[in-house]
Image (cartoon, rainbow, N blue to C red; front, side, top):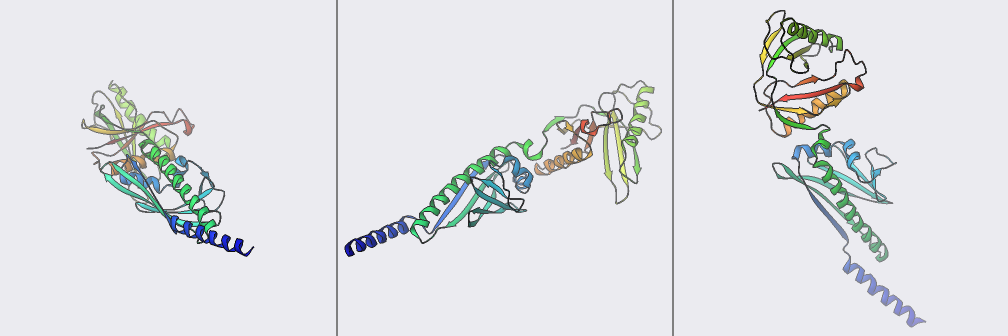
Length: 313
């Protein structure tokens, strides 16, 4: 009996030593994917938890904080915001550890998403094996999560929320007028100016060649400058505050059709400016909204369609 106990202890010692030798005390995880997008674009996407929830391959966690995300029974908690890197807490049962997701510029138009972590395993050989197996699985999970991020962020429409194309200016002759308000201009106030331009074009039989255009600029804390324009094929008399302007035939960024009211359009305008900044474009003129839907005839703002135009060089 005594020999059996000694033999068991000897074998256990050998196994423990073998486990300690074969399995390191810390398991390092290092996963990287290539993303065809600019560094600032990816950084903005990484700092938007709402976008995480669109590309995350798992589900939201029912636990706090609200940033918590679940994948294969493991909780991931991005610590936002971050500048080109974010800490991500990883929790599995009672175990927790920190990881870092970094954005590394690869070239002018691409980045590497690098996710690194180090997981401590126990000195107990049985616990050590269990934690080692979990650490390897977490590494595979992180790789799958990165692939999901890669697929989502490589499509710029996913990141910006709008599709943006580079076109050439077509309607170069514009009737223009403007007005200053002490409040955000209402739909009726906007169309009072648009209808003024339409009547001038009709009176002089100048064919209208496109949709009315609009730009609202907040001048200071209390005034708003409303500019409206109407593309026409021939000039009219410059009177009653109406002037003729010609757009330079150059490049212009054009969004897809934006459906919705003021909030949807303002978000699209903000994303267009983000695109201009990310791609180092220079504004050739003010951006403007093309009002595809006549807001006076269609009162339901959820049905309004708008296009964003941004002349650039």
